[in-house]
Length: 88
Ligand code: FES
Image (cartoon, rainbow, N blue to C red; front, side, top):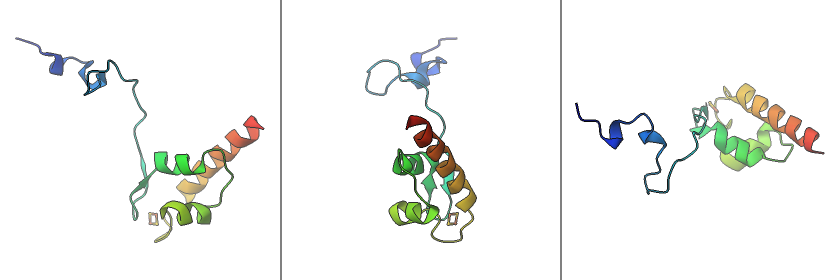
């Protein structure tokens, strides 16, 4: 059997543009299914700030419809708030 680079276990870590290895990234999790907003987007919006769910909704739409994601958004906000407090 001939194994090509595409079948290598490391193939998925190669950059598609030939720039070497890419570090593995954590999977993206959809937080708000109504607006299709993921945890990475919310974390970037919240980064370094202390925001409310309503402020997150204003900035990206997450949480603006059924409200089923409010707990998840609040957990991301709490984690960010902790990092802000530790950084101060
Ligand atoms: S899942 Fe976010 S508003 Fe419905």
